[in-house]
Image (tube, rainbow, N blue to C red; front, side, top):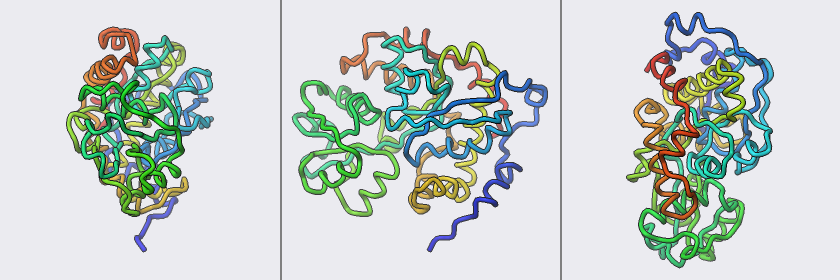
Length: 331
């Protein structure tokens, strides 16, 4: 059995910043005012790749948040913003763009990590272009899974609305349907790819962490409700800092980060594999605005949004805090 560090040792490492160089000791951070509010509501969504959110639970307290609430949203975190039940969350960029196009008062704040999605198919699907006329399982329409497949399809000239049959199934059912050959493909993020490989179900068609152009852009981005950012700019920056510090921790201390993820009910070996495969350390290297532009173009091609990339960027992004934190946080 693989050794896993205890939760107590993990929390000790987080509180001390052991071996990570989590924060700069600059005067700007030392003199920063406390958050305007001490309560913050974040989405509680499934998945291993969002490990920075799990790690950030401990770091938000050090940023002055005494009441951190995690609101159940299922796979569609975006509904939490629509319902006004969450203030801030990290999630896949493309559905955020769709919500901005629909007029939802969101602000995209900064990127966390690049690709974690993998598209698995039967022998009938060897490339994205083979999805034409095929059946693809997703947990919900307009979920991150659905929108990512649509974006990939549109990039190779497939109309996802007319030329792909999407069927709705939870991940466990989808994996069995793929094994039985009753669907042609499914897309998932950890731990789904690990389980598919372990059970030798399907084959990888696309890895968004390895295959261009998807690997060149952020996958998950932090967004907040516009009103929250307007009223609480210091709290916004502090929350974003906690998530980015947690991202650095995942890169520098993968075993400890995997322990925190495993404590949420995921397998430690799957968690550790994810910590080592996703390039959390490179959050400074990707361009958040280029990511918005890239996915906006793909969604426009797919007929899923009407707004231009420039309109989405002008009305729905604010990179001030992200750019400041790039300078403040050590590499």
